Length: 487
Ligand code: HEC
Ligand code: HEC
Image (cartoon, rainbow, N blue to C red; front, side, top):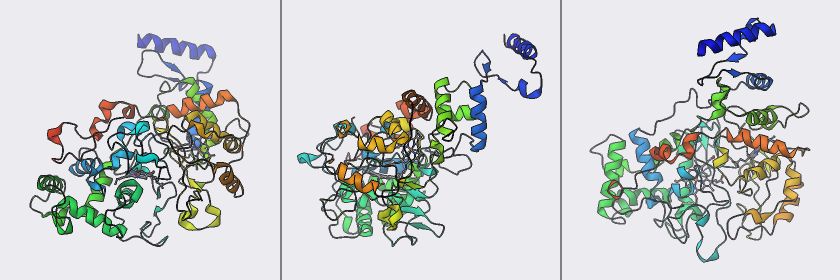
């Protein structure tokens, strides 16, 4: 059968008169029974792929841990444990659940003060009609190990060359306690945030560092933390740490430290590599891996303006689809804003909050687009609850921003009354993309392309099982502080 095809192809090739070596490479065999015809579309894309130096796999040559390692396994248990929050009510997974694309499906995250601490997603509600205290959307933890320089929407954890700077030190000094990598440095902060995990009363008046140390002491049942958790609970964690760190005789005080907690958390997060998507297969030569519409969408994405494209790749660059730079793309300013001492100001100045450089006002880190179809809502504040709305925004930010409708928010009490006023202030600063005319059908093509960036594992609960701890009660901590989420 295959031989017949081959003969047919040779005959066709000869008939067309294109019997040189390049013509022969037009026909690429694939795994299915029919050979795939490389179209003009494929040839144009191949040129762009070469021009941008794409390999399809951003994780290539990086030393990233497997989820099977003992340390990543401990990290997974910690990531899902409410023991790391002041009032034993929030886990990292509350806002970064592997079955919710590594996020929480909310525009603005809800940590402490939830009505039901185990409910995630759109049904998660704050007590007493509170407005959300967390000002930003939870980015996915998927592929976190691929960021080279910045964590957070404003990059406040940054690898500077002389170390990693964090909010604990004056920017851009290196933080001596940042740890070995960006994920480790980052993992030490959510536990210190009142709205995310700490609550109002835990280690009240303490510093970020004392908060971390008190949490470690409570988990290990030593120091001032002795007796705060049940003895079986602290014993359980001591066993888990001894196993993971391969120190069977070490004492809790030596093993259960804020540094070892962060190291384990980051090892788990860095094992979440989900890059095996159809686009990668396509870049690596399987021409049938993506649809014709997705190919057309890819052309629009990579081609420059004036060459029938929208130049999305000027910022969403490379195999990780980000240049890790900060840009003002006029994301509609909804939500409480960040870092304002006056609650009447509901503005988020983005990168400026870190650098205080006037040019950085309203600039946010270019996100990766891997798995973007499952990481909504989109934008640093989750202003867009549909991916087509986000894509339309990127095509013409100004038009989209002035016509933005907060009714699309699926979450109660997200402040939006300052929208127009805040937008005027944003427009007074430099923006980084000019609007452009676009065809409505191009939105659908771009979406078709973006959908090829989803690793099938992330939408398959069986595949994600490896990154989710067992819900079997006998496998869990004795005090039942593991997050067993309902959506
Ligand atoms: C209440 C929800 C919430 C909880 C709980 C939470 N996070 Fe987050 N996380 C967020 C939000 C919101 C951001 C973005 C904040 C910003 O950029 O200012 C974020 C950012 C991050 C990032 C940076 C991602 C990136 O692309 O730069 C990582 C990694 C992360 N969190 C890991 C964790 C870990 C580990 C824990 C537990 C120790 C945790 N988070 C707990 C909401 C949460
Ligand atoms: C000037 C740089 C730049 C260009 C050009 C650009 N983007 Fe973006 N894009 C960004 C930044 C910055 C954000 C984050 C905005 C925020 O967080 O508020 C973003 C966000 C996004 C998001 C949301 C991702 C998420 O996880 O929230 C999508 C989807 C997206 N862009 C697609 C596109 C497409 C499609 C194009 C081309 C039509 C494009 N972008 C062009 C910089 C750019």
